[in-house]
Image (cartoon, rainbow, N blue to C red; front, side, top):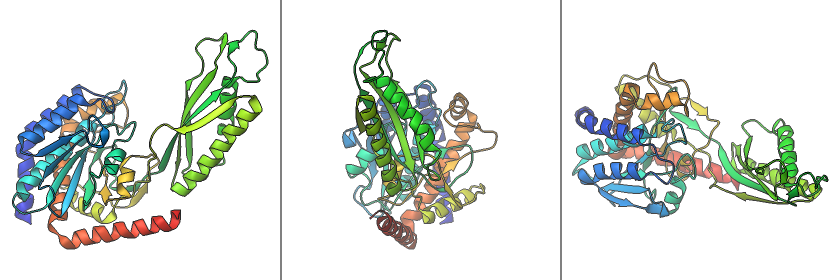
Length: 396
């Protein structure tokens, strides 16, 4: 085992110049979700040159891909690649590091596992920041028959084992009577007034919500000029909760209130999803412990305590079907906040380079243990099945 660990780390060391070049190239050309054509070309070219079988366009997404070594063999692990950027900020979430670390881990693991059986998969998942590319890929079967799914995320602290919130994305559209604002003095049929009343109600309602429940929204259509009453106004909201059952209750109250305000203002309202529902992410503790062991092998000490995240992510849907981990990693002297220009600068510089190599090493070491230890896979699977049965009992 120790000899193979040395080989894995040596392989990543050999790959380091290529990995850093890929990370820097993607960082310098940030692309929004489902438009990541340069990133797609860069990542898949690397894999194809290394002899991987690559297929693009899975799940009907133009910038998704899946790459295989040992397709159809068992056991099987997958490394996930995210590569979309944020508007204006660029790679303020460090996805250039995420995708490249997964590439490095997968290729290093393939070199050590060559001829020993098992399947290694790299899944390119677009639009994590917006439409949740993992969800259509999940429906398309790209995660079927996997023993473990893993990725890393750059962060501001080391958080290895955590849960996230369920999320529903709802668009609220009020329609009413358009006309000249100076003439239409009566607010009956005023779609903007209806939407504002809804926001005022939300402000009071949010104070009464249970812990971890969240409702946040923005107006995306509120009229264009002051002297024209808009015929339609529109806002988008994220509703979050610990469990789907609670989320469904939030949605019911949310929709009933929107309908009530429409009735009382002489308007009409439509409430509809504008993005896929994100399920709670459930980290597999057994797999997370293996990742922690891998970090300790690399002289990085961190805890395994379970944390409750306040955000949501599309890997949550994957974790409900397949054992998964999504650890956050950082290094000293790093940025203090994600989704900032400071973070975008850091992930494109020396701090990001060092973190990328560390993550690739930890992922590769973890994947090797999963592929080579049957008892470990059994424990990972047993924990996942127990979680699934528990979730069914809670929701059903």
